[in-house]
Length: 240
Image 1 (spheres, rainbow, N blue to C red):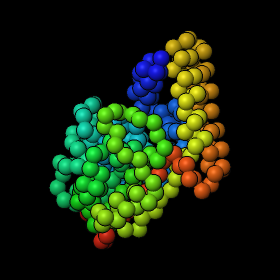
Image 2: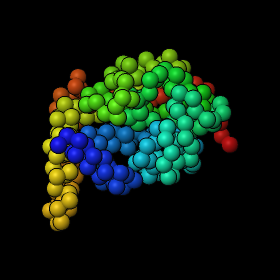
Image 3: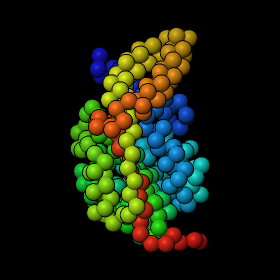
Image 4: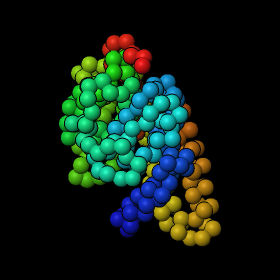
């Protein structure tokens, strides 16, 4: 049963990637996009690298603010501009104005090396957004290595040389627990004509509601679902 739900959930995610609905497939995604969207507007600009782009679910969001969107992932899929590892990126020094890396660092065996690569490829004054899970089930095994606190993300960024670091929590225990009924409901009901469409619509509103409530309870976020950090590479931005 677990493998069936997992397979169906992945299929639904693949089918909706690139659509707004993708971010409301579960409370975990809804709580993350609620925090990432305003931060992207503030930080993303110029030539932007989506490092570990995967399904390129964030492409539409990043293209709103970037002049040039570059998607890279470890494995090839249509739409990518490059294939490569975050630990050894195929670009020269000072190539990008901004870097976006969401829910990737937990799958990187050497995150300090990856952060150094992001720093190397950013222009002076360039900016970065990274998000990573604090609470999460095992996924994409065996390449699931780490979980991060806000202090851990800050330490990684500082060691790489970044400054003006800001951190924020995205989601909490309510979104984490709310993920389970969301997955079960949509994967079982979606194949059923008409009922499946209604279930997906209801699940979207359920995901939004849980994420909204989660922001208003346990405000210290000791049980944060994800942490997000934004930072800047020292130096003045180059205008070309």
